[in-house]
Image 1: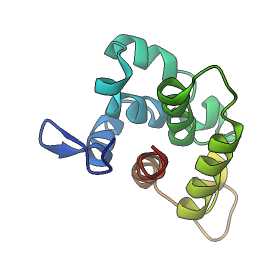
Image 2: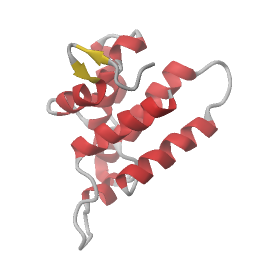
Image 3: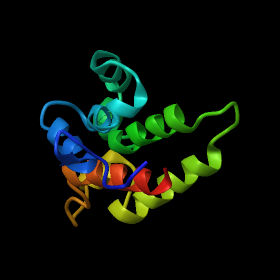
Image 4: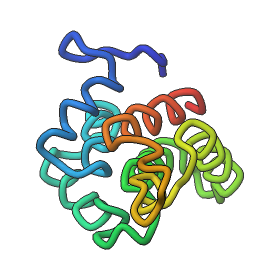
Length: 133
């Protein structure tokens, strides 16, 4: 899979950001990989529906990272565990964004402010996943 994969004239990372304008972070990442996944838009939207805003409460993992992990599983699963690959994706996302928990990324309760915007989390999740694929 090419890092600069383009569909409809846009790089995948920018398609994901475009989807983010209408859907949650997880759904945006899933939709960016729709051509490779073989699932309908409705199925991808349903799959990612509960993972936006850190699983709906900002207290858990960023939806963009969850979506990237789902895509990795769908594309790379071959009857073996993918824990090392999942750990690598999480570490890469953490390095790019500064945190993995939605609340921390958005700077809730922090005097520093946000670490990473939702759009950048989506971009970084796609870039990290493309680097592993």
